[in-house]
Length: 317
Ligand SMILES: [Zn+2]
Image (cartoon, rainbow, N blue to C red):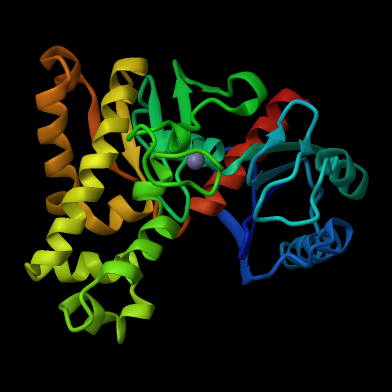
């Protein structure tokens, strides 16, 4: 039996499955708020895992995979202090869980794990795939020539913090002009609440400007609202600067786009991105790279955690 755990800043998802490719046996998903104390948080996570194992009939656990926000060291299994898990500084998570459950444990950051799951979800599996999370924050995972590419300090794929505008908008990371400061859900939400017209369609859909979120802009853009369309255009413009660089840097067979792009869909995101790709990338390369919306929806966190469990099963056999 494999166990996968996805530890987010506001949600915890756990999944139990038989080995390779078997259907999910049981899942749990709960809202949670990290307490600020890693030992206490770990107690909650272990308790939930034990409950799920009991639900699954108590079969022997062979591998455990954990997705956590970075920074982390996947080789030593240490969580180094993610901003959205306060109090988690240099936590030897893999070793602690190995002791707790007596099985192989692997850790990956959430973008890397999601990229593996997106790669596995396609048949046939593409030679290479880059997955961009495009959620509250922006990160990417790289599966190159059929292997997860982690880079130095597990930092490969941090394109969310490569600048798309020199000295542009300030980013939560401390730099300026980062992709995340333009297309990340948190940054976009802050901007929208500042500039959305008080009596416009976007504010109306949200029930007030202070409640506006990206999904309201997407809905209003579908109705043809001018402000929403201009915001979507701006979002696409900044994202395309990163996608062009990704295409030239990796020439991946597939670039898969996550949450916000997936909500925008074909007309609002893929079509304008393909047009920009055609304009800014050599034709031979632009034709070869497939731009797609993510293949996995709600099940992505579970599949991502199980993809990490598979690493544990294979590497630590
Ligand atoms: Zn940044």
